[in-house]
Amino acid sequence: MPTHSWTQYDVAPSAARLTSSLRDVGYDFPAAVADLIDNSIAAGASQVSVDVEFQGTNSFVSISDDGCGMTAHALLEALRFGSRRAYEQGDLGRFGLGLKTASLSQCRRVTVVSRRSPSTRQITTRTLDLDVVEEWDRWLVVEDEPSDAVRRAQDQLAEGPGTIVIWEKLDRVIPERQMESGWGRRRVMSVAARTSTHLSMVFHRFIDGLRDGRHLALTVNGEKVESWDPFGTREDATVELPLQTFEIETSSTTGQVQLRRFVLPSRDTFSTPEAFERLSGPLKWNRQQGIYIYRADRLVQFGGWNSIRAIDEHTKLARAALDFDTDLDESFQINVAKMRVILPAALRPMLETTIQELCLRAGDVYRRTSSKSAASAPRGRERHTGDLGDVGVALRAAALEAGQMGALAETFEVLRRRSPELWRTLGLEP
Image (tube, rainbow, N blue to C red; front, side):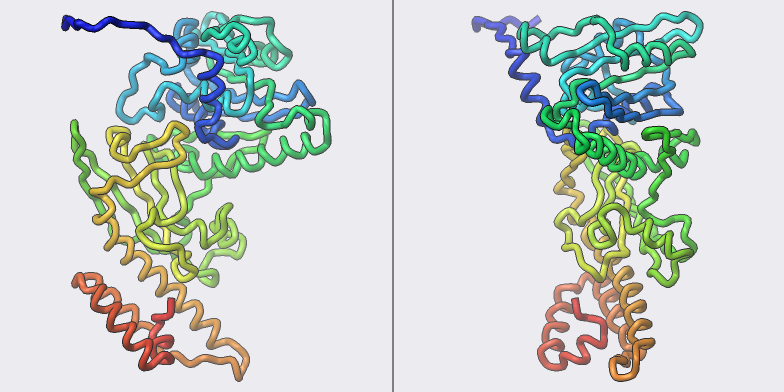
C-alpha cells in the first residue's frame, strides 16, 4: 500500500446544498422518466407503466415495472448518490446517479417500492425526501409512513416481483401556487402527452423487439405507447444506403461505430397521407432531419447534423442512425441525463463524405417532387426542367466520390454568376 507524507482532511459535502444543486443537471420531465425506464430495462422488465395523476397538492407520478426487483440492500444502494454498483458493457446505466437526479429534478420526494422474491411477499420501501435532507443536512434515506400513492404501490406488488418509483411533492412539475388550479390539471395532461411521444422515440427499438427479440410494453396513463421509427423502414419507398462502419480508438479499447443512412419517401410516394404526417415527428420534417445517435440501442440524441452541415429544406428527407456501445461512452462524452453526446474528433471527418452523399440523394428526391409539382402547376406558372436536374445530382455524386467537392463548388459558383437560370434548372439552388 502506498504511503503519503501529506496530512489528510475528510471534508464531506453539505448534503443539503449538493442535493439541491443536483436537481439542475439538465433533465426535462420526459427525459427524467426515460432515465428511470433504463433501470427497468436493466432489471429485465417486459412491461413498464407510467402514471401521472393530478390530485392537487397530493399529485404524484409512478413508474412501475415487472422486472426482477431489488433486495433491501440493493434498494438502499440504488438511492446512494454515486451508486457503487459496477456497470457492464451494454448496460443503459452510466454514472450511478440516474434514479436520484432524474427523480429529484422533478420532485422533492422519491419513494422506491420493490419486491425481489416471486414466492415470498417481502416488499421493501425506502424514501429520499429533500425536506428531510435539508433539515438534517445529511444523506438520509428513510422508511416513512406511506402515503396513499405508496400504499397503492405496495398493494400492486402483492402479485409478484417488480419495482415502483413514486414521485411526490412535484414542485418542478406543478408550481405550488398552481397545485389546485385548472392550469395544474392541464399541465399534468400536457406532460403526460409529451412523455408518451418522447418514449415512443427513445425506446422504439425496445418496443419493436429489435434489440434482443423481447418486446417492451410501455403505457402512459393506461394508453399504449406505439413505437416511432424515425427511418420509415416499413415504407416500401424508403431507400437505405449501404451500411458504414468506423473504428474509434480510446485509451483502453477500440470500439466500432455504425452508420445507417435512409432517404425517406416524398409525400406522394408514402403509403398514406397519415403515415407521411406521423413520420414528420414531433419537431416536424425540417428539424427531424439529421443524425439519430443510439447508445446500446437506446436513442440519446436526435435531429440536426452535429455541425457537419446545416439543416436545409432540400434535405429534410435525410435521416441517419449512428450506433455506439457503452465502451465508447468516454469518447462520446455522454451527459448524465443521457440527452446529449459530442461526436469524437476522430469520427467527424469520417462522417462528412458519407453524410454529404446521403444529403445529395435526399435532395434528389426532394427536387423530383418539386419538379412534379411544377409540371402539374397551372399554365403560366409551369416550369420546364426536363431531366437537367439529374445532371446536377450526378455531377455532385461524382465529385463527392472523386474528392473534388471543393472544385465543383467553385465551378457551380461561376455558373451561378454567368447563367443563373441554368444553375437553378440543374437543381443547384440551395
